[in-house]
Length: 317
Image (cartoon, rainbow, N blue to C red; front, side, top):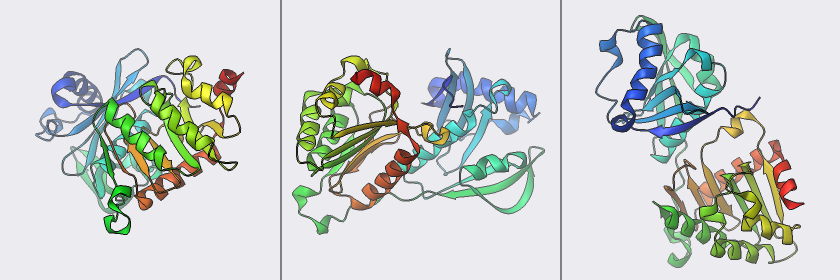
């Protein structure tokens, strides 16, 4: 069953310390009897934290990525274990690590949780050891480096590095990628983002791809198609007029549903990615064939596992 009763979002120690401490105190200090002096350290303030919340907004889990490239302090409240919360938090932390260009992430995994981390791709190494009275195992995972565009391979005007920090720059980056397409665009989104894809310039750019010829294809993977007032969304209206060019699917596998980012790629090597769809920060290139190929392969694999979106069919009636 795909979990729909919680969310995972970034957190910071200064702003969210009270809630983060409460979760870890419940799990580690009270439940696992970890001494308080061992639980709290100087890394918290400089780390990137995540927090999981129930549908009602109650904090139910947390984890952190330290400046040293370690993931730890993974804690989920007892009533929420076995419901995908830990997997979702770990996926978000790994996406943040990739966005920050870490090449490897290491963890001190509690020995009973080895299978949990192995499912995410971590490998154990070294000997088992005891930390805070609990058996642990060193584990690590390699983070593929983002492809660095080779600027000498193409004219400068065709090779523009893309970066976004807010809504306008994110929209401009998406528009730049779509503008490079000959006849094929692939988009992965968590919802129908009105701030990006319900804008006249983006709609016109997609329209130009759609009418470029009989082989034109715009494929869209969308996790939550009913969001952002989908019944009034211009992207939906455009797809209704050009039905032979547009295809929508929604991921159904839990691992795909937990992907926290979003991206768009074109058939001419352009790509733009936001590692957290809840934020506008992103990066990309109008000619980065290496990273574009990685994202396209990821898109194609999820597309094959996904199903035609029932919600989009309803909207198109």
